[in-house]
Amino acid sequence: MSQVTITPITVADAPTLQQISIETFQDTFGAQNTAANMQAYLQQAYQLNTLETELANPHSSFFFIGQDNEIMGYLKLNTDDAQSEAMGEDTLEVERIYIRPGYQHRGLGRQLMQFALTTAKQAGKQRIWLGVWEHNEPAKRFYAKWGFRQFSAHDFVMGTDRQTDLLMIRPVDEV
Image 1 (cartoon, rainbow, N blue to C red):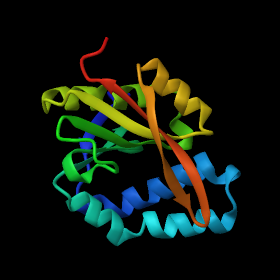
Image 2 (cartoon, rainbow, N blue to C red):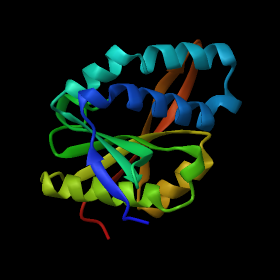
Image 3 (cartoon, helix red, strand yellow):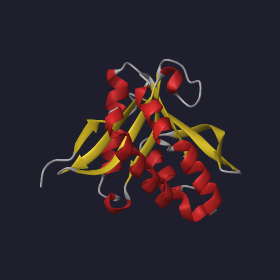
Image 4 (cartoon, rainbow, N blue to C red):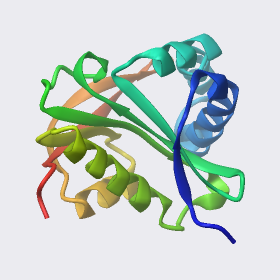
């Protein structure tokens, strides 16, 4: 078995990115949302042209994590005006850490978070932040273990349902 790799995603990878986005989002949030709201969100957020636009943004970066030609998940990072909140030039946003259902609990999220922190440090960022659904307890525990602390919240609209994402932040250099 070969080593786990983290590789950049290009616009040519958009169909694969779309498939994994839908699969992981439904797996994580499907049971807590109506089918109609889930379908509306998936159609809006993960249309091929939407993903292609995100991939073309010079302030967003996407990375697959995989092994032996199998894609196990992906990471999306944002800087500058690509961030979902105006956080300034000294921050990096972790917008998505999505691990496919069959590959969870293997340390892949940990590897992607370490990659995000290293990327932020190499880019000279001072802080790293993210949003997490207020009811996603496993993710909240994961981020807390990495030293993230809540500093605010914002709305996240799932179809017709207005939900709350907790905004969490930590210094890049914090041990």
